[in-house]
Amino acid sequence: MRCRPGPPSTTTCRPGSPACPRCAGGGLAAGVTLMARDRGALPIAAQVLIGPMLDHRNHSASSRQFAGVPAVWTREMNEFGWRSVLAGLDGPVPAYASPALAEDLSGLPATYIDAGSAEVFRDEAVDYATRIWAAGGHADLHIWAGGCHGFDALFPTAPLSAGARRTRTDWLARLLDRR
Image (cartoon, rainbow, N blue to C red; front, side):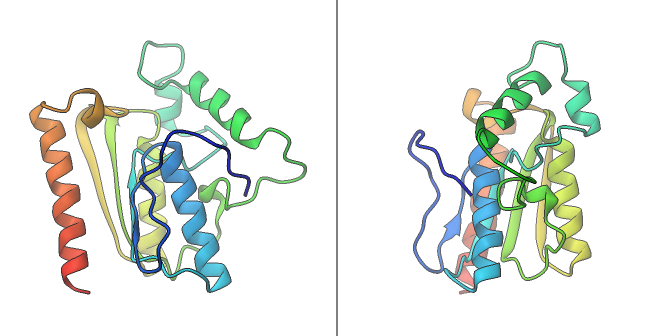
């Protein structure tokens, strides 16, 4: 996986820490978590994937719903984002770069995934959680009705945003209390 410089990340890289980024950072955290599992490396306590960008194929129903329309993040923006992430890659796209490609989602840490119902990433978030469950893992999925991509950051005082942040924070607190 190639990492590119960007804005400060909320991902923590200490053993036993949770990974909690959003958007493309959510896809990066999911890829790093898969890699850590596969290499038996850095133990990750949990994944908190917020509106995660998980699938470079851009073929879901929600991706098609947000094509050619005004939105915070559209199908076209997503295509550009993936072209940028995968630029210079020779050969097939690895699952560490596009986690939806991972064939095996067993052995992952507890995972919290949320997305808005009105966003490109909704269906890939649902699919990723469904595949974690099918592999015998623990996933807590929340699709926030009426939420657009990044709704909780764009409209921080809206009741929906406050509810999403509270639910996410409570989940993480419960998980960390069990440790």
